[in-house]
Length: 142
Ligand code: FES
Image (cartoon, rainbow, N blue to C red; front, side):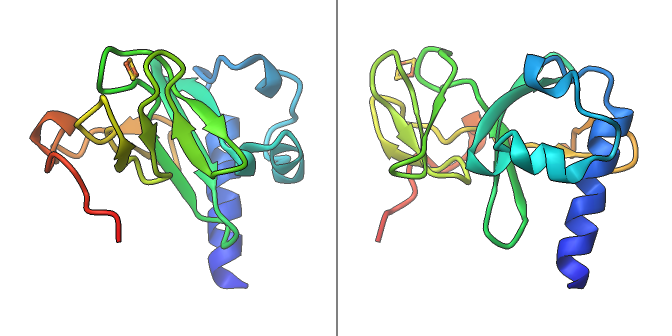
């Protein structure tokens, strides 16, 4: 469908244009080979580095990418993907975050910072929006 096509080409551009993607698993993937991109499990949640920033990237069942900083807002450890719970979990002190970066469990009290990638350049977009430090402290989980 149209939505999926748009998102897939976004990912293709992201691979092709972004020379700063340092993760080893991206190195052997031909430009624009989105199926391979899927194969390596980005949809299962991966951390990658773009423009020297570590990102937590998840592609949902609708092919939508969710991109947050992978840096835990507690003491800056890098979060890991928890495939059983579909959460980003911090290995250092146990903070957990939803795929949109919202805090589920502390000790972190701030959400992971949300990020966007320019589909044509593959670089991070700095929108001038709120940073994690300016976000609401906690999203109610209902
Ligand atoms: Fe992540 Fe402490 S650094 S929970």
